[in-house]
Image (cartoon, rainbow, N blue to C red; front, side):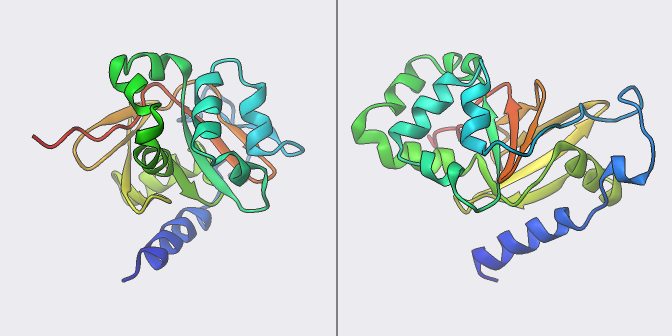
Length: 190
């Protein structure tokens, strides 16, 4: 099966699941994940610009020349590491910013991007419906696995590298920004 078909099937699977809030009145107390803030008049790029803890990600996206994607008509979900997540990378993070590392940086960022409009509520519903973790193909042709433990949703790579959803996700006119507490950097093969 081609990567494009896998990607489209993954997006379609999550997209057809009903929104938790569409099933009736729910309070945030009873919701398994933090509700997604709606900013339908804004684009993904605009939402990133309005978030105070995303300046490092904005710079990295600009350096990698991927910013234009988030102002376009396509719908994407961005797993968005916070400034603290980038700072935690230390020297490894600084090395990624070297011009010689741009192809590696672009690949890393594409593995933080999913096709379609995927909210944490849809991910939680998919996990509940499946009875366990769900996997999606990224725009970098990698896979990420979403799991839930209590109210916490995590996303991980095949090698076990993981991050947790943190902060308030933002739904925009062309996608969703889901803040993460870590950057998904595959462990170096040794």
